[in-house]
Length: 304
Image (cartoon, rainbow, N blue to C red; front, side):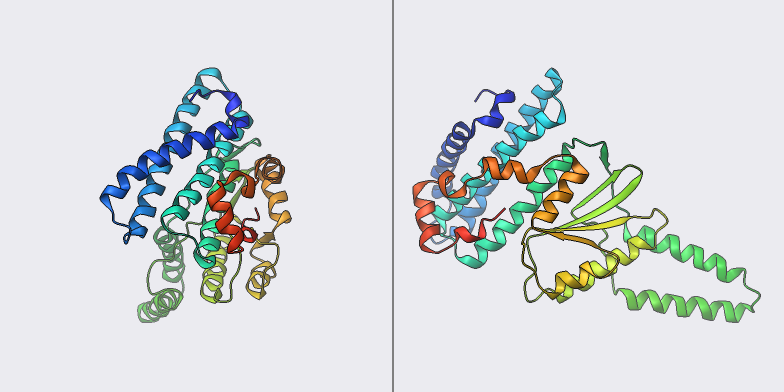
């Protein structure tokens, strides 16, 4: 496999390479796990293919560093490698444990999120990633501020202690444990910090997740750094849970083509155009996989 800038246009070669690697791996995996252990076979082949992808991308980035490629050149190569890896992962998983609609629709959504994030890992625009704050750090900072404020009030020691006790009770109502402030992506652009959550779509049982996202966004909005919260959803059609977040005033929520437009606005790269030009699931899958997905009516879930 020759690694250079042209790899972004060598889809057929990459698919063949990943399939050869998958075939080699499956021969070994089948000696380790019986047919009844299809879950373990599937997990092992995914791990093997992801390792192959990582080696290719690492090699590519090393070459890019030597030759001083720009981010657009790197991104388009990484997108093609990643897409071909996904195609063969789905094929290989389907060969050891045929997909049904529930696990397939979920899997497609899981793969969309990291694929979109590549535009921010190799951005065209001038943006930078940052590490999100820990909830424990945020809680300590706010608690210290409130404690200092109470200590300076013209109250008795007993009254001050009572206020601190009530304040501690409020924290206990917010969460019985630590709140996860880390979302899918965190970046800075033009002096503004953004936190992003990617979602494939909203099902009928999203109440808990919706409430969590509202809580997390509320915390971010009350921090001094003035974060903005973005929600990018793959599905064009969504339900009341999406609308709750969209109308909350604390989430900037976008779905379908609108989400792709925002990815382009912030990262500088037109990912929608890339997917329209390069992705053709039904043709890129091998014959066996396409036949299975057609028979089970699964191709409808592959709308990126």
